[in-house]
Image 1 (spheres, rainbow, N blue to C red):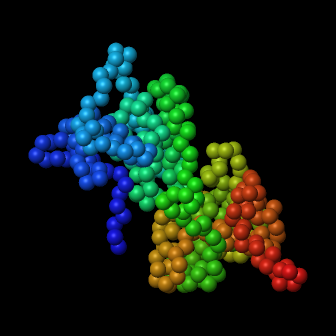
Image 2 (cartoon, rainbow, N blue to C red):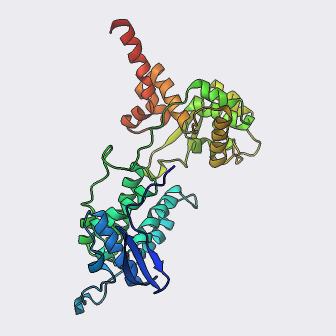
Image 3 (cartoon, one colour):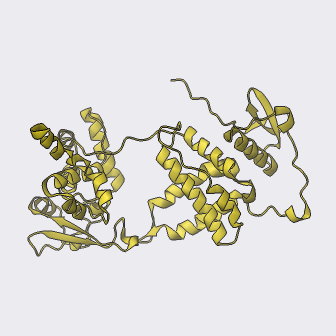
Amino acid sequence: MTRKRSSLPTYLLHKPTGQARCRIDGKDIYLGLYGSESSRIRYGQLVAKLAGGMSVDPLADSNRKGPPRSDSEADPGPTVGELCLAFLRYAQGHYVKNGQPTSQLHVVKGTVRPLNELYGLTPAKDFGPLAMKAVRTKMIELGWTRGTINASMGRIRRIFKHAVENELIDSNILQRLQCVAPLLAGRTEAHDNAPRTAVEPADIEAVRLLVSPLVRDLIDVQRLTGARSGELLSLTTGAIDRTGEVWTAELSDHKTAHHGQSRTLHFGPQSQLILTRHLSADPRQPVFPITRHAYCRAITRACEKAGIERWVPHQLRHTAAGVVRDQFGLEHCQSVLGHSKADMTEHYAKAGTAKAQEVALKIG
């Protein structure tokens, strides 16, 4: 497969002179001493011009020195890299759950990498909309999806907002970045992943035949309850109230706990039979002693062996939503999934179109 040509030049070393260079339209532009702050800043300026659709003159732009700064501009202020570092320190204390870092911290670090690569040494006051578009172009070239890129642009603004909040930069810098519009579907080279849907019963059964008994039971409970995989994997024997006809588990640690929302899992007769096989005498013992990664990997490997389209555990939640929506309605589905808003439930319950198809066959 032909490698896609990058629209952004690469920061390179010109060995004979020790200068940094980048190639634009087949011509080298020299940026100054390789690895120096000034060469990195110059590189970021050129990338921003290209991302903004501006032309670059190799003769005029090569190794050009900027205008002398006035006394009021003697201190350029913090760099973009320093703002990222300050935000990461904040994030390490903010994105924590039960003493452990959440996945959001990993996502923030991923956003910071291309930002720092292009503009880490650039003064934050010089980072404007064109520079932000250049970072976005870099993300497109890395193969990130449109939704991920738009979310990353929001995180970059959050980094600058944190800097404004702590009086590291002026608020007008953030205001300029807010002018960058999000990528629109069908109007960008960034691709969109297909939305996750319910898993076909035949595909679930094909996987069940190839996984361990533990993973098989976990699949069945998730399909029956519509629970998130993380909710079931954090479930302990002592958390399950088995006094009623329907067993319940009130979760203190769940996805929306930081919003003050409650989450209760309900286990009917079929789920109870499965859970009984995994209950322990130790109330603190996890019911399903397996990590989320191992659970997901077991399923995807089984899909490969079975020769079917790959699916992941979270899609079982869509499967459960479709069944509940068809048989009981949206409100019941919303209660089972633990959603506070019905529009999110609709996202999970699109399989409910089966009823509309039945009506169409009879009267339409």
